Amino acid sequence: MPDSVKLLSTPRFRPFFLTQLAGAFNDNFYKNGLTIFIAFQAASVSQEDSNTLVNIAAFLFILPFFLFSPIAGQLADKLEKSMLIRRIKLLEIGIMILGAIAFMLDSVAMLVAILFLMGTQSALFGPVKYSLLPQALKPAELIGGNAMVEFGTFLAILMGLIASVYVIGFGNAAMGIAVIVVACLGYWASRGIPALTAGAPDLKISFNIPVQIARIMRDAHENRTVFYSVMGISWFWFVGITYMTQLPNFVRYELGGDQQVYVLLLAMFSIGIGAGSFLCEKLSGRLVEIGLVPIGSLGLTLFGIDLYFNQGQSPGGELLTPTEFLAQGFSLRACFDIIMLGISGGLYIVPLYALIQQRSEVRKRSRIIAANNVLNALFMVVAALYGAFALYAGVSIPVLFLIMALMNAAVAAYIFLLVPEFIMRLLIWLLVHTIYRVDKTGLDNIPDEGPAVLICNHVSFVDALVMAGCVRRPIRFVMYYRIFQLPVLSFVFRTANAIPIAGAREDPEMMERAFDAVSAALREGEIVCIFPEGKLTEDGEMDVFKPGVSRILERDPVPVVPLALRGLWGSFFSRAYGSAMSRLLPRGMLSRIELVAGETIEAADATLEVMQDRVLQLRGERL
Image 1 (cartoon, rainbow, N blue to C red):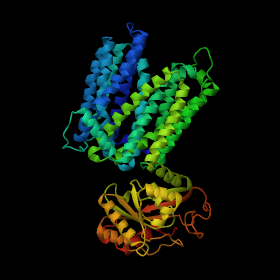
Image 2: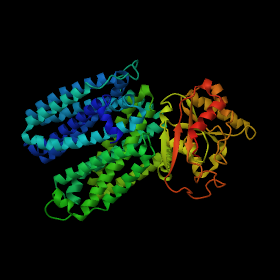
Image 3: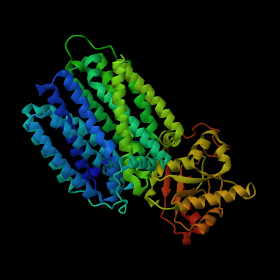
Image 4: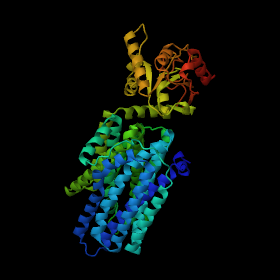
């Protein structure tokens, strides 16, 4: 069972999960029920008016995300989160009571107007929804928690759409009762959410919306990686809304399927998102692994292109039922593309949400998530307008899918060039998951926050990459400057902001700059790793530790975590056969190595002899 599923048994996650599940279900249950009522049951509404009302409804639901997200972000930072969520759920009950009255009165205008109130409630809930997770979960659970939230959200969307079709068949009164019941269930679940400390209790709330939008955008832009992650999520919703909006007509006119086939493919997409989210957790190894984002982006492009080549294969005549559709040769390919788009979306979006939560300043986290919501809403509106314009201009749906896939490739390449950390993490992930199988022991000894020095034996040119692929927190490595001259490693270590160092005889000024950079990093609360031997081992055995690490601790007495690598001696990247990288994969693919961390050594006790002895004990007999 995935660790994310196990979170459902914990009282710090289960009530929140059920609360957001009920909210997402109710939003889509109400919206789709309204759409069905307008399209099929409101006798006074013409086809032209129906199209207009549906578009107005979509606009009214998304408008509050522009208007109220900045205020919502401030409230989520200032107030205790569980209390705020309960108040928002009480607001939902009040709105759903109005919605029930509108259904019972058969009032189209009132039903549409209430969507604005629903959008307001959703806009208020968004920032607290995602900023709560880093407080409620342990760092190792953050990916799993986000995977469950994304899976639950898309499952709720799907179930809300399906349930509305059946419930409205029993009459508008049944819809009205149902939306109230679901809102009450959401409030009941929210009562179990544990209290969480406010991020910025002294924050003064400002209701100047234009000023606050500009301010939260500046907050998001303070961290370059966070900001472009926000842009990446917004782009995902641009692509996702395009696919979701065009899917019904794609099924009807390109694949020849009926309404149930549309529901089937929508279910496959939702299942794909869930599978991709859980796969992301599995492949991440409990890390916030943004190296998976380029893989997800590649999938969104490849399977979007394949949908284009799956056009014009539907038979004429009667629309196909699900059974008839699945019997067609082209249907399996279409189903595969839809599922893989969902899986790619899960791999793409889960690490981005987790990264924003992990790297945003705690006092501003909710406001940065509010900025994300504003941009998401903007991109979705632009996507809807772009899709409508493209189709009006005569672009077919398959061609629109092809354009979106190619645009996705271009946008992804642009973001990855601006923030090369995504590609750097991908290279590290590929190393750790294709060339080696890494067993990890004791890594919980590395503190989740605050400064620390990591020390480790130095066996190969990829020691730092293996460590970076296994440790949850970003590490500032102190590396011999000549390693920056190696083609791939130079890109990786420069992107990881490694600190180059030289010996006192080679370049005393560079050595002093390195110690200054280490001190600055520790005072910023970062983790620094140094290989105290000062060079790669020539025979597999550990060399004597150099005094550089003692000098670091004299200047900044922080905790020391000893680590040891086992199994890398004799590998392609070691000097077991003379020059490193002279024999191609001498131990074969997926050879097993180990990274072991020992108990923390306090700075006062961290003599060279003690540190070397600890690392030697951790390494053991296996080289």
